[in-house]
Every structure is written in structure tokens, then in C-alpha cells.
Image (cartoon, rainbow, N blue to C red; front, side, top):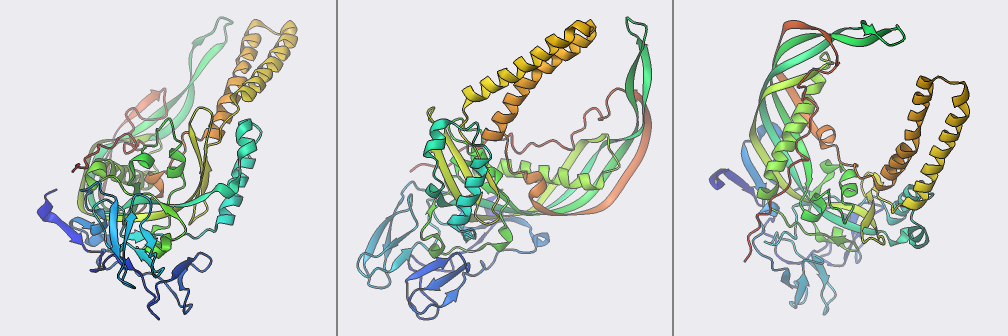
Length: 476
């Protein structure tokens, strides 16, 4: 999109680097009380909140063109070192934004913070403060691990300590979109399900097959859709959910966050926690976000297409994104990590707002493999005992039960690793769909179809997960 058409919302409010002060007494000794969900002045005990970001469009129907906040601007520098001037005593304090975005003045002990967005992606526009306390997170992690303790790696069981959990703020982009769509395609409705005789087997018995009569329709949908706070990771490491060395997909799986409660970024919310920096630009993930917007749209339309139980083959999907808004955010996560003998980093994570928990536990594959083999040996012994009084066909069927062992192994492995766990953004992202016009014309009836699902049905496909990011951050 042409830069001339991009509207920039200044979320800095002309604030400068320095100490954040109490609105009541001006003291800079401020902490976040997680039980109350408020900032508290440690001098006069005034409780207060940060405020909403001015200028962000709340009514997504009004979005036109491209809107970006200052916290989403492109990263133009690798310089992580920033000098803060203390407004309390005038001293200058150097801070490494790769490790933190706040510090304490070593002269007057005022807490200093970066209030304005800088070029290295350290400071977002909005933040969701921690809601769950560390003790609550520990209990959730312990419960998660306990359910998987039997096949856990022995070394992991000895070394696991839930108190090693850390509170971390991860960077995300929030995207709002105002779209208009015109979709056309074919849709099928199962009118009849029945059996037909297809011949006879070697014993002279009739062979039957279940077939379907499907009413085929040509359909059109003209609609408007608004998508609210589509959330996507803005750190390359966490966005890579197929990393073989880190189980980052489980971090993605604890979404969504209650993004409607985001407030203006205030560094005091970060005191006592660690944080990661944004290291990718909008241009790196724009293609991926647009694909996810289309996925959300496709799934939202399915609510209007329940009659077509054989599926929909969308042949022309024209989606115009009339307006889009980008906001940079920090979301809170309780994180437990463990590196196994193969140097794979396993995570157990808790959404510090909703309590959603997901994780990967190092597996004792030897123990699981032995028990899976024992299961198959027991089944084999039973088959052998029954074979004396069974026909050859019955014995062949019984031998199929030997797949129980491998199935057991795969099921348990998946439960411990949760490799396929993910945030179902296509279902969980808030959106509002308005159908302007429907057209449903019956074409014909397909007789005796072997499959219930319409050939070419694509109304449940997901494309946004397939797109990898392309790094475009310029180097100095």
C-alpha cells in the first residue's frame, strides 16, 4: 500500500523517556498490584490505571485505508542501547532494551522507563497486565504435568519444579479489518442416504455400498464483515510454530487473550517480569495476516451455510479489505521451560489472563514403547487362543487388532508433546458478518455418489498457517 494512504496514530502523546509518576503526588516509586489489577504509588498509596490509547478507531465499520500506530513502525535499527534521563535528579541511565524497557536510577532510585516508541521494536502501544498470580500459574502447571507423569522422562520428573515459572510479556500485533466480499461457488445438500447392491462376494452374499443423492446448488453471497483484534505473534522465534528445537506452538495454543481489556502501554506494568521485543515488521507478516482474514471470513460464512451439509466449493472469493488497523501489544504469559537430553526446549505455558494452559512434556519413549509392545503381545496371545475355532476371515479381522499398540503409542506421544496444538484463529477471532444478498439456485441432483462430501469442497480449508514470514528488516 502506498505510504501516502497510511494514517499514523501517534500513541506517544509527546511523552519522553524518563520516570513514570503518580498522578496524585508525583512520586515515581510505583508498582503493579496483580490482585487489584491496578498500579499503586508506594508513597501515597494512590491506586490508578493506565488509560486507553487515544485515536484508535473503535468502530471497525468506519475503517478505511491503512491505519497504523507508532508502536508498529518498521524496525530501522539494531541498536538496543538507550540512554534515559532521570526527571527526578537529572542523571543519565543506560538501558539495554534487549533485556528490559525499564530501569532504576542508581542515584535517586526513581524507576525510569521508555515511554515513547523507539526504532528497535522494544515499546508497544498497548499492554494487557498480568491477572493470574504466580501461585495460580504454578498450580495449573503442576496439574498439567501430573496428568502426564507416568510416561514423563525420568530426568524431567526429578528436576521439575513449578516455582521456576517466569512471567513474560510477549509481543503481538493486533489487526482490525473492515471488509466487503462477493463469493460464488457450488454447494451440496445430502437429499438421501441409502445402500445399493454392487455384486456378490466369493460366498455368494450380496455386497452393499452406502451411496448418497446430493442436491447441487449454485450459490452467491454478498456480505460485509468486520474482524476485531486478530492477534499474531510479532517475534520471529514464537511465530515459528514448526521449530524442531523449541515447542513454540504451545505458546500460540493458549490464545486468545481478552484483547478488549488492553490499555495504554505503561512500563510500570512490566516491573518484576521479563519481556521479549518485537523483531518483525508489518511487511513481514502482512501476507500471512491477509490469508488469516480470508480464513476467518470463510469460517464465518459457514454459519450461513449449514443447509449445505455436503460442503461448499467456493470458486470465486472476492474479498476487498476496505480498511485495516495495526496495533502493537504486549500480552502476559507464565512460562515454564525445560531442555531435555536432545537439547529440545519444552515449554509449559499459562495464559496469565484466562488461565488457559498448554505444554510439551519430555517423553520416556522406551517405557511407552515397551508397554505398547506388551499390549500387542497380549492381543496376539488372545488371537492365537481363538484361532482354533475361527474361520480364516475371522482370524484376518482379529489380526487387525494388532494396530492397537501403535495407536496407543501415537496417542500418548501426542498427549505429551501436543505438537498439533494451535490457536484456532479462524474460529476464535471476534468478527461480525452481515449478509447483504443471498442467491441459491438448484442445478441438479447427483445420484449414487460414493462420498458424502462434495468434490472440491473448500469451505473448511485454512491457508493462513501455510504462509511463512519473509524477513524484511533493513540492517544499518
